[in-house]
Each structure stands twice: as structure tokens, then as C-alpha cells.
Length: 214
View 1 (cartoon, rainbow, N blue to C red):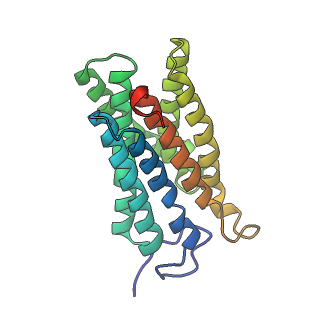
View 2 (cartoon, one colour):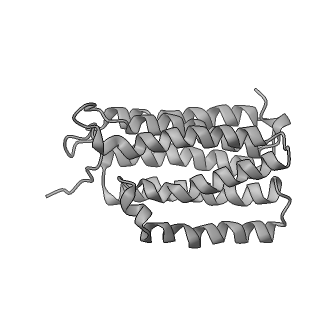
View 3 (tube, rainbow, N blue to C red):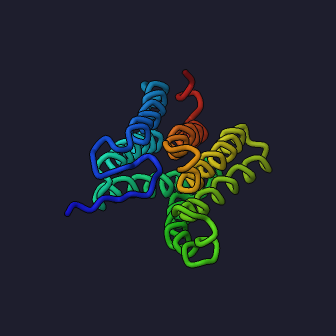
């Protein structure tokens, strides 16, 4: 018997298109990546291109998960997300807080080591649907936003805006299993759309601005 992962309202069975809205809305990540690539078309800024590539991989990986709904597809979904978070932290520490690359890399590694500890706290049981795993990235995002705001950096607003959008998107992800009776299609699709906006703002906030103007 084929086992499939069924954790969202929209999925009704093991078929490829059993989560059509959750699958299609992953196009938002590809649109965000396309807009960023357009702004970077004349740029050789490798950190920005790495983030654009990871953003594209997030869209593809999430599409695979919401269509195949298997363990390997879940891995394809999660790995690019983790890679994007770590890469963004490293680039932010280096580019916006002027840390040496070695120190910035240690910051990314520290996040990887510290973030899983959240899952062993009562917080993980209070926040349903695995959304507790996104609390550490939210904390880091807010910390970057506040740090830049304290410096009166012109880049602060990207991260402040990204923090606000991410709170809303994470809320939509979290409540999906609890609203199935009232909203049969669930709210997870909103997580995709708003999360794409969040990641777009983060990349804009980390890229050389003269190279991302549209």
C-alpha cells in the first residue's frame, strides 16, 4: 500500500493533484525568483544569485511535496528552506553587520545547532502542524530587522516588512489543520503566497540595491 503524507485540509487522497491549490501556489516562489533575477540580470553578485537559486528550489521542492506527498518529496521541500535560511543569515551577518565571512559562517552554523532545540521545548506542543520549527527563523528575522533599525540602516524596512508578512504567513500555515470544517481548502496556500513575498523582501534587503531596482 502506498503511504502518503496527509497533513493539510486540501488533500483528500494519495493522488498527484489532490492538493491543487497548495501545489499551484508554489508558483509564487518562482515569480518572486524571476523578479529578483530580472533585477539582477546585469549583476555578478554571487550571494544574491545563490539566494535566488535557493528560492527557485523552494518553489520546486514544495510543489513536489504537495503533489507526490511522500517522504522523499518532504525532503525536497525542507532542504532548500533550511539552506536558504542559513545562507541568508550568513549573508546578512557579513553584508549588513560587517562581520568577517568566518564569523558570519559560524553564525549560520550556530543557527543550525540551536534551532532544533526549540522542538524539545513546550513551545513545540503549543504550536500545531510543525510550525514551531519556523519560530527560530522568525526570531532571527526580527532580530536582524531591529538591529538594522537601531543602526538607522536604509535596509531595515525590508526586514521589518518581511517580519510582518512572515507572521501572517506562519499563522496561516499553523491554523490550516484547525479550519478544515469551515474552510475545506484550508489556509496553507496563503503560507506559500505570503512566504514568497517574505523571501523576496529578504533577498531585496540583502542584495546591492542598485542591482535589484526594477
